[in-house]
Image 1 (cartoon, rainbow over the protein chains, first blue to last red):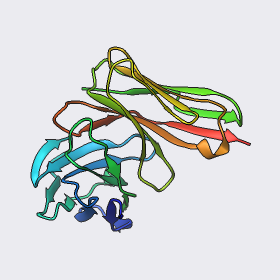
Image 2: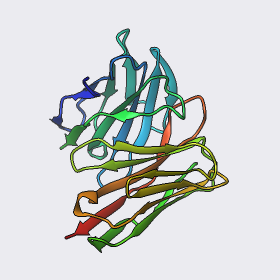
Image 3: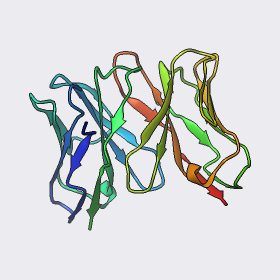
Length: 114
Length: 112
């Protein structure tokens, strides 16, 4: 069975541009979460979606937005990119999205902002 | 703000040695998860602990959740070069969401 997939793998953008990152959860999983991992740090929570509804939002500016589609895939959008947005963006899927539910991470999208 | 303090940040040991990684917080977590991450990849779940005082073993790895569900430890016995990687602890902040608070990670290097 396919695990969590993310696209693209790598992306280079310049300041001020916008970017869309995509995630496909494991088949049957209804929850998708997004995390940002800056080099040398642990991942930071950005959003969680369950059944197409936002269930949680981290401490990120409004330039960050996300949505979940009827097939449970998800997109993360970042507008007006800053140098500090350079990071590995991770998507995690789980069956129900609760605290004791196992979360499976994708390989991530490496975003570089120049 | 809920924080997870993970220590040590870096650990370089010889093959065969034992080690312990600690994860501490002033907050209570519904559950705590340990992940291992290789360079350029996403974190891979090692274990989830839910009950205070719980101990789980995964081959040479032993995980413990503190009685008050505020801290956890990972002990590796007879470390091997294949154990090299970034170890992350992550706490679930409420029972209704999957939001995880991650520690800053422990980079482990096991030299042959």
